[in-house]
Amino acid sequence: MSFISETPYSIEPCLLDNPPLDIVDLIAELTGLTEQLGTRLHIHAAASLAD
Image 1 (cartoon, rainbow, N blue to C red):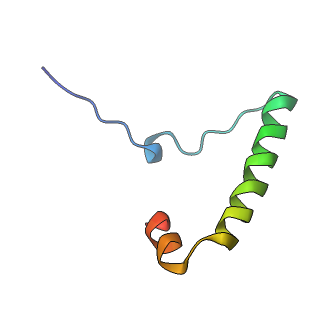
Image 2: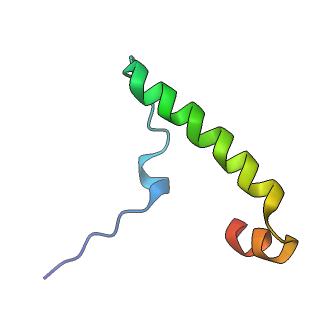
């Protein structure tokens, strides 16, 4: 049995030509929330997540 392993790198870049507006809104919200999270994490926890 063969197993094909996919990684996020195998599909980059994955760009949508006309993404739905609700998806665009969710991406903007997620980006804002991750910026807030990054400012609240301890430096070692942030480094661990970055790896």
